[in-house]
Image (cartoon, rainbow, N blue to C red; front, side, top):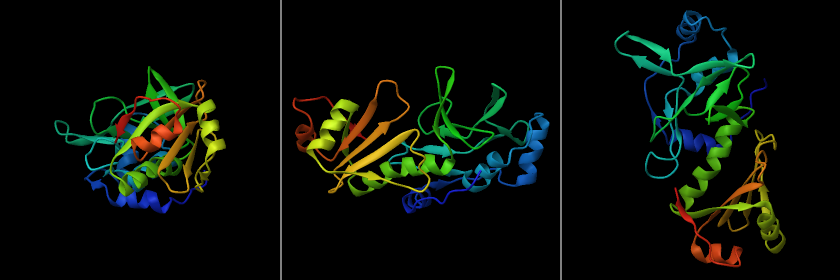
Length: 229
């Protein structure tokens, strides 16, 4: 798979993250795979070499964002072990990230380097590459860095299309974006950001607004919103 260049926003997000010690030597990782009887996949190993041990965050506190690592250190056995892996439909999946705040299974990478969320016992694809995943995350990082607190609420495509008809929105583009899983839009003032989930059968989208006044302008009636992040 062709490697994509990360956006500058992604580099900023990763540079601002916390760095922790982990396994990054290719030979050592290959030994772990062989111990489990797993083929060595270059895309999976490359992920750990480049991003293993980076804990990035969105906002001031470690709540949004992920701890990027496929391994944990077993102190009793004095060795590194894979966090979680499984084989489904003839394909291997490896947990490659952890949530900062919970013990749920974080995002996983498959043998081809595609990234998935795991929920309700299923894998849901979110990006074709780790670069696409991080560039998606970095948009949130960038606008939270600009204004620390935002209001957010869910929306549907009918509402979004009305927004776009009444306001000028610009599609955010990145070299890594495949336009298969999501789209990002923002207004020229960068006080409204919209993420459209292209895989959702419910035509789901999330709106991020700088303040309640802007949110009220977008919706005809008062709506409940939560603070992000």
